[in-house]
Length: 247
Image 1 (cartoon, one colour):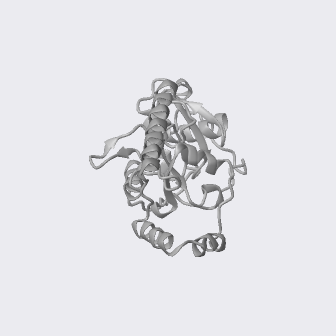
Image 2 (image 1 turned 180 degrees about the vertical axis):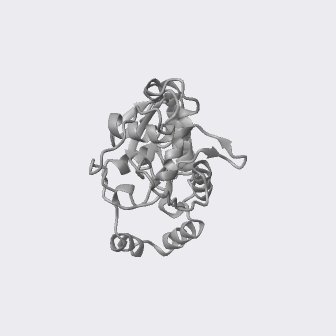
Image 3 (image 1 turned 60 degrees about the vertical axis):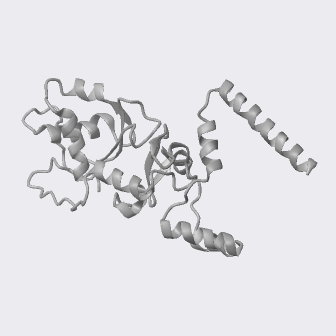
């Protein structure tokens, strides 16, 4: 969509326009695609307008991609990012042809997290621990398999769960693998590992091992707590080695 002023856009300060249209115009004119803004800036721009936050959220129904700290971990609590502008809803007589969505944004996020067992599909880091599914302080984010900039969509099949670190690596431009390179690795696995991989594919996730869970929890300890665990683990390994040697 061409957002250049081939036709003059209305002034976002025009109070005769609907507040949702004014917010869209304000985002384009004042903020601009790819730039961050805060809730305070939004409220200062539209003083006295009730539910202005809701009008902002409603723009997502027209294809506007507005990220927050729930989708991008590096954003502050009141910070948002205009990732991509959507439909020019200010155009007179424009028919809003909204794509039918099976889920609202919160429902979609929940569906993706449930499908991926609340675990990062890259490293296996999970936000639940043990059979009781007690919550663990892990930041999980949704990521696009095919980026929006490359024509990807917000459909369920194009979304995966990543931890904040893996998502950051993905956004940094790490090259995605192709089918042949993946199959080359799969073909070289032992029969046991191929069977294990097939089970992961059937489950559509890789369950984290106990060692991986222990590592992720260890990394969230304070430095002095890490030292304590490291010393106790070292002693346990040493004791076991001495026992094996005596046998």
